[in-house]
Image 1 (cartoon, rainbow, N blue to C red):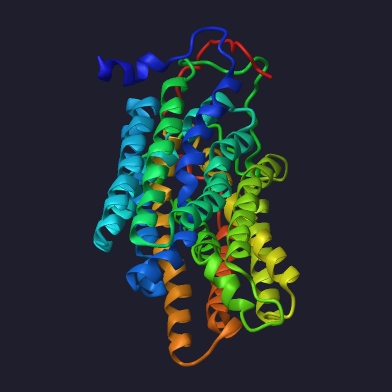
Image 2 (image 1 turned 30 degrees about the vertical axis):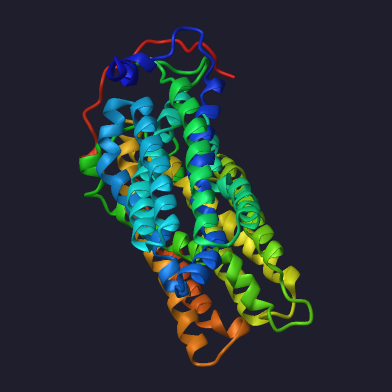
Length: 453
């Protein structure tokens, strides 16, 4: 009975179903799994109670991002076949279950259980939950792919906007002790299970051949918009896929390096100034970055519908490199400059994620865009290790050498500038996909959408 409820055929929308009822189901899942972006609020508490280094306390987050990419890559085709309800159910079990295992690990002071629970089990939930609504929303919004992917992924960026102050408040109330940390993990696991289950029940997919009323596909080769389809198997054989992989990997690396260490980073940066940053203000900084991460996903991806995916990635990568340079040159002379630059960088980070599925749709069509997207997210797996490793390892090394303040992060920031420049160049080489990779043309389906506004 449960299997039947999760089957894709049970989620096909009836005639007259409004496509605008679908985005809230994506947000229910993505706002929950977006808690991962508030990991930096847990870091100081874990480092204090379990005597961990910055590199060690980053391990659950790094493993979660690795598993996100791997589970998305290997599960992408399965998600396409079994449908979003099945995927959301699996994501709920894994993500919430991982938080509960982490609670047990914190309660017993067994850090390896937190790594396995949050990183391995929860990371699988992140990957399956992340890709589950994306291809569904692209099918519902073929006329607005940037808006659709922005909606789908906006919630993931905004998850920390809720989780960061909520986690900080729970750690204050429960206490920065193994039992207090366990309580925070436990509450997260139970509450997120409820919200993700709502998305699982309510999600729908369009019937085969459905399209919005009056929709006519664009055919603009110069904007890299293809009317052909490419399978996931063939997509990874194209240079376009791997160039976009490099673009996404380095854009994510540059953003995640700040995001994963945001709370301790701003504290370190201004610790020896006349007005240091308090722990509560640092948590507020994490929430602020989450807000720009979330808004960037919708705003920049929506703008990409107007100016094109290639142009918007020029902004992400080129302007992002300039902003890192500004932070490096101004050091801790101005909190306002540091915060504003970090906010814009994180908006580009979020925008890069939200625009990637639409870029894939332009290049490879909608045929197996979910599966292709899953494979592309292996770039996130690499970046999830690379970004925190660069920032944490260098900061730990500089701290051991007696350095402090902005000097802990100067080398890391210059590395990020170099990676963004490489990504910018890779984006310039992206061209339309060679016709030899296209699927055979099918007879056009005759169908009328029920709601096209």
